[in-house]
Length: 182
Picture 1 (cartoon, rainbow, N blue to C red):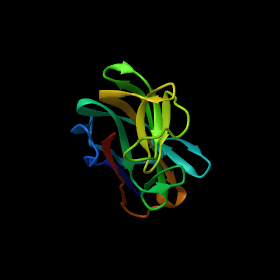
Picture 2 (picture 1 turned 120 degrees about the vertical axis):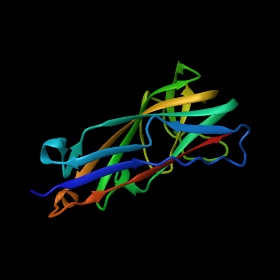
Picture 3 (picture 1 turned 135 degrees about the vertical axis):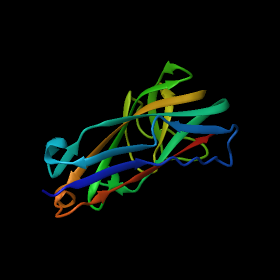
Picture 4 (picture 1 turned 30 degrees about the vertical axis):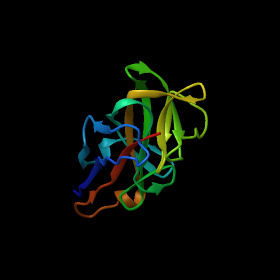
């Protein structure tokens, strides 16, 4: 029986913007998601050409030493509508349950650094893509705060090519997050 091993690693990288008004730290509830040995029974479903693994959640929190506008940016390599996972697969990352200083807020996205500009409408859930930043918003305004927290839901979607294995295979992906302030 052939076994394929899938492993998703969320690596934490802290970068401080040169224009930052405050020092910030970023933390994850867990730095690694490991699916271990994966068998056909481990797939939660199939969508088009993708075999979907079960969702995993990671709480991400940015804490700054003062009230600032902040954005949490993600980098991980683009693949279709998600992040690259292995040779030909994707990893979808959705952010939800956002809070700013303990109060629920809507999520917005920005692709601008330094001076943040909203990219699209705010909502309670956002699909995160490479080089996009998450921002806390109310209406069309980016909010200031000291602690910004979101729940990340990670969903690997494996291509047929990445599931055809004759021996053990290890599939990995790293996502890097950094917090920037305005």
